[in-house]
Image 1 (tube, helix red, strand yellow):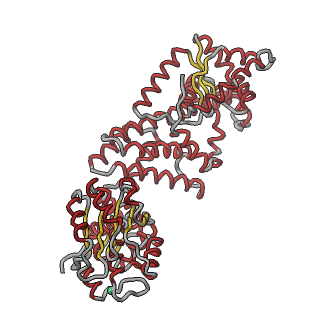
Image 2 (cartoon, rainbow, N blue to C red):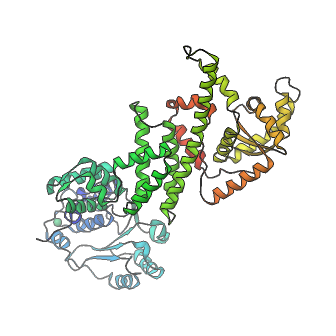
Image 3 (cartoon, rainbow, N blue to C red):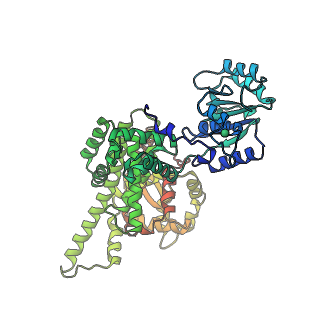
Length: 545
Ligand SMILES: [Zn+2]
């Protein structure tokens, strides 16, 4: 006997055999058992999840001469004829391969003829949204008053494109993607019957990749089975599907964390040349980050910096949205990874430099046996240490990353409260100083002020902590303050517009001030990760002068 594709071989033979569409099946079986069969159905949902299989099963079941609990018997004359594809009363039309006008006209002409053998004539129109307008109009006429002996089953992957006049005459069923669990179970079942030895990870990976489509999943299993002679290993799966191995992925993550630019470029070049799927690669790295973050929280065991993982996840998530739309995926990936590394390591270097300065100071001020420094001293020293230009630009970056229109309106509406502090002994200097500045951009936790002259900006650096405390009093929240000359602001604004036009996102990166918060990153919960993502990638993010 010639080889039969696994997908055909393991196609469900009754409605009850169908996997992952429980609700649809229950409703259909009830209708059959209670003799309340509709005359027009629409099955909608993604491809490969069983719409046409169920349509055919329904056609068989309504015509079965010996129903068993609402399922076709598979043995009666009608069942056998339908199963063997011999029944002239089951008519399948693929609207994707032609516009359907002739076929639908043919239906119209013959619709009143009684079935040849069966009780019901069943018309199955696949990808019905592809019909031409003319065909839809013809179909509409037949749907208005279908004869008793006719059932229409329209299947579509794109319900939006089906005219509402058609939809309103049909019973609509939305089909779900099949859950990974169900897919794995089905694959396990097939492997057992086919005596295929397979590593469990392979089935999970197939389920992941098939995205809820059982047909694709079984197809993949079939291909792998042929490739590996019934003994399937994970590496076979990775090879066949152009997937980068786990070991390689970990190596890549190391390159990124270590800021090893040339290795990152070479790596992406190589997987591209090897024909690996770059979109799946990004998905996999995101998945890996997710697992590492979970490891960090659950097992307290993670070789990566948690902050690194969270920031990288955000950028990968954003990449996934964009790369599906571009043609030069490789270039876009390289640019995105390099820009991430640039930002991430830029901040880390500032942190390192500051840590070193602290240590040096401390060692010169105390004997080497007294190396234990209270946190308080460290943070006090840090307050003056971090007021340098690098931090200033970091705040600019964060402000662009989280620029927010509402925040800016809120900020400006309270700006005149500065006047109340003009004569204040503690905050007067800061209040007078910033009232000379121009508010250029406001993020969810940072602002950019610009001044006419560099000397003004320099004076502000020594006042920054005071300024931030003053703002906290007025706004009841903390803002990091960046101070720029007007010229520098214009440059930054141009850069921002350039980046925005080229889809290069700004990433929010916590600054050194918050080092305690970063080190206590366990407190960062999923919500804050999500909200960080929303802040980073929300739609209405930008408001600048
Ligand atoms: Zn039967």
